[in-house]
Amino acid sequence: MIGTLTVLKKAVKFGYRRYGIPGAIVAGVVGGIGFIWGRKKLKTIVNSELNEQTNEETDKKNDKEKDNEE
Image (cartoon, rainbow, N blue to C red; front, side, top):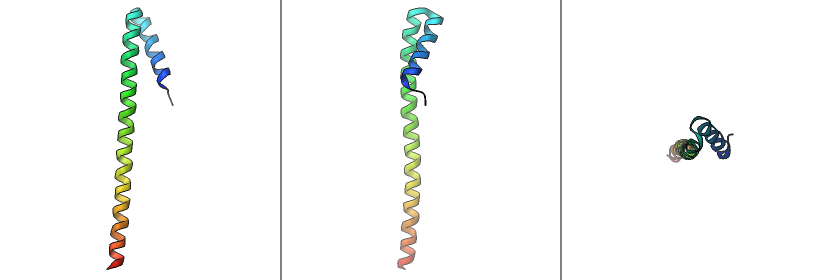
């Protein structure tokens, strides 16, 4: 898995090579924000999918229990 520090280092190196010190600063900030935002968004999507699966399994169990009671 790629860490935040690795992403920042690569972004700063890219920005510095292309545009000098100001480019390194901008690339580092934008790259860091983008990486953190993307990671949070991915976690949100994965958690919502897991919750949906859990809810579906719970619904199926409840339906089976209701059928058995009748």
